[in-house]
Image (cartoon, rainbow, N blue to C red; front, side, top):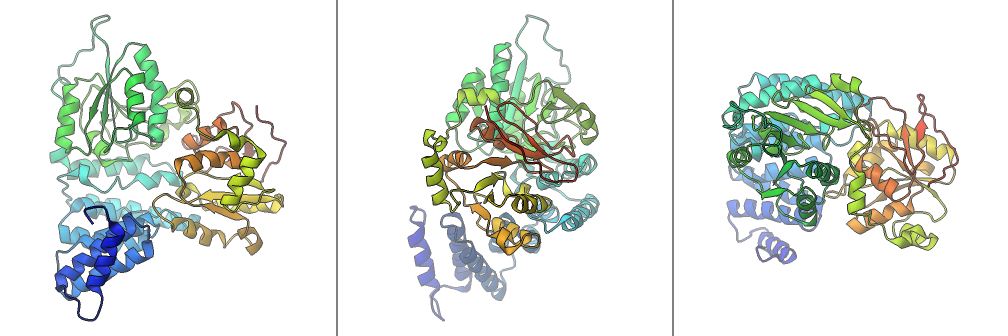
Length: 529
C-alpha cells in the first residue's frame, strides 16, 4: 500500500479477511476493512465497495467493543456526504465526533447540508433545520482548539440556496469565534499603532491569503487584479496554503511581482505569525467560506483593512472583515443588505479577461470543426444532429427549479438534449439529480438527458466546442464557467435576474437569452461574433 500498489493491497486485504476464520484479530479486521475502504474510494473510485468495507469495519468494531475506533464512522460519513447522502452521513459523523471528543466535527455534522434537494420544500426544510441547529449549538459551549483542521466551513453550501444569508452567517461567525477564541483571537503587532504611509514613503502592502493560488477558478479571478496592482506600484504578498506550487502559482507570482510564501496546510498560529510579519496595510481573503484556514484567519486582525472577495459569493458574517469587494457583473449597490461587510462594487463586469490573455482557453482547434464536434459527441453519447443545451456548472448548483426549465426546453425543441456533468469525486450525485428529474420529465425526455462523466482538463475545455448553448444555473449563477463559454464562442442563456448577488451578466461576444419572469423559454436566432 505504501509503495503505491493499491490494487495489490486491496487483494491482500481481501485474502486476509476471507473465510469464516480469518487469521486477523478482531481489531486487526476492523482496521483492515477501514483501510481497504480508503483504497477503494480514493484510488479506485469503487464507492459501493468502499461503503461495504467501511460498514464491515463498523460491524467488527462494535462486536469487539472498540468504543474509540472512530475511523470507519468518519470515513464513511465523509464519503456519503460527497456522494450527496447527507441524511445518512450525519449520524455517522456525530458518532465519530463523540468518540473523538471533537467539537469541530460535531459542529460540521450538525450543519451538514445535502448537495441535491428533491424540491423547494425539501430545501427549505433543511434550511430551517440548519438555523435551529445553529441556535442550539450556540448554547452548547463548543470548544474548538484547532479550527484550521476542521473538515470544511459548514455554511459553504448554504449560499447555493439563493437566499439572504447575512443574519445566519453572522450568527455562525459569532458562535465560531467564541468556540475557537483561544486560537482565532490575534492582532498583528503593527496594527494598534498603525499609521498609513505618507505619499512617496513606501509602497502600500497588500497580502492575499488563499488555499487556491494554483490551477483553480480563484486564481483566474486574481490574475488581472494582481497585474493591475503591480502596475500601480503596490507591494504584493502571496500566501499560498495549498499543498503544491504549480505553473499558475508561478504565473500569479510573476504578474503581481509578488513575494510568495508557500505554507501547505499550516497551523493557524504559524499562519498568523507569517502574515503578521509582512506588516500589511491590506489583507485580502479571496474566498472566505471555502477553506477553514481562511475562515479562522479572518477572525483575527492581521491588517488595518481586511476584505473578502467573490471567490465565494457570499457574505462572511465576520465582524473583522471590513469590506466585501465585488464587480458590477456580480453585485448591484442595493445588494448591501446581503452583506455584513461594507459592499464595494467596482466598475467593470469581471476581472477575468486578463486571464484569457495570459492563458488562452485551451479548447483544441478541431473542436471548431464539424468533424471535431461530431467525434466528441460520439465519445460521450450525444446525438450528432441534436441541439445541445449544456449546464456545465458544478452539479449541486442545478437547483430543483431547473427541472422545469429543462422540461420546457425539451418540449419546445424536438432536437434538444440537456447536458449536465458529474462531480469529479463521485459517480452518485448525478444519479440523485436524475432521480429527481424523473418526477418532472417524461421517459422520452429523460432519454434526452446526457450526463458527462468526470472529465480531464482537456476534455472539459473541448466539451464547450460540442455544445450549442450554455445554460447558466440559477439562483446561484456561474462566473468562470460562463467566461469559459464566451472564450469558446458558445452563447449563454440565463434566467431573468432574481437576486443580484448570485447572477453574473456579460454580453461581449455573445447574446444572452433571458428567461422571462414566468420562466417561459425565449427562442431566437443566435449570432456569435
